[in-house]
Length: 466
Image 1 (spheres, one colour):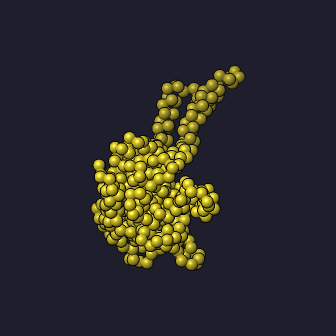
Image 2: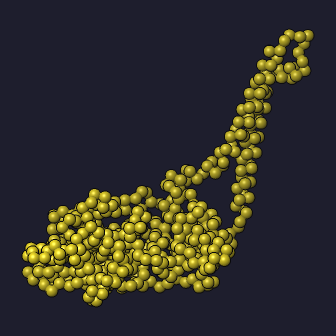
Image 3: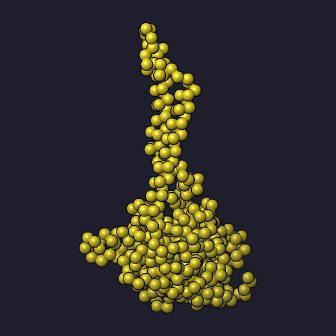
């Protein structure tokens, strides 16, 4: 868009007002990520106190970019008496970005409009009081999961990842993204990108502009998350000038088009007083494999196992008398559901009746008739090896029957053994199904998948997909 000189700054500041419409200091749920949540923070308008508070809350965001760089004090000593020395360092730029410092005219860099997106671990009370768990109304229907969070959202611990975001004319700018140094490699970066995409969709923005460092491993990570390198022709097509963005000299500009929202199916997990709502995908994630019930069931069972593990941990603490039973969020279960380990295991072909029968128990039954055939074959040739005498013995005469009759008897024996094995296997299945009948529960909304459990560790066996 062509803007007259002197009006570019006003045009950019007007477009950045869109992000001001979203609430700050509110918690939002990420669908499909039951162990984390995100929030937007505003550190602007407080002078030096805003960046100082941000450094105390998410210091890893500053540390990730300031480590190994020249600080303000060292720069002052180095530039003493030099006229062409640089004025600002990366430390200053981070403070300006987090504090959203506004420029007075177009000759200055403008940092207004920035918000900080923080990713937190989610707190789950796995031992709530009876009848105390209720859905929490959403802070903003444009952000977060499609339904009200259940149980209520709560923060446990300090931030895991952070990102600075700012709205622009048709794009969402993300100059700084970092994950805590002790939490890297666990998928929290992907969660931050999903939260940023959620914010962009709420504002009706279709483009993300990311500033990446020049390291190959860092760029490879962003490419894995769907970002591509932005050329000058791309910036011109996006109507973005270099002075519109906040970026360093040793960085690479990347972009990504915001994907449409995924389709989710809500799942409700219940065990006594514990109730939790989670989500399973109904469509294929961008860049992932084929979609279907297998992926949806696998994600749902992973959440079930996490909740069951947390509930079991809290139960053991309460029984042993070790204080309160408030455990952490759903992590990996001690006995995870194996049906969702891989797509090959989740296919119907590998879940048929043949795979349910234990193979080591079938081998002795299969070898039994063969051994009988070998023994009868040896008995048939034994009369030929005996020395000549006055006449054949009674045993030899008994074994000299017609070969066709003996083969028919052997086949009949094999058929009887197979029928007995099939009958015993069917009886075991019926006994297993009748061992723990499911108790009917109160009806829930038709959009949810109900999970009826008698024990937390058997949640995977008791799950019903409706």
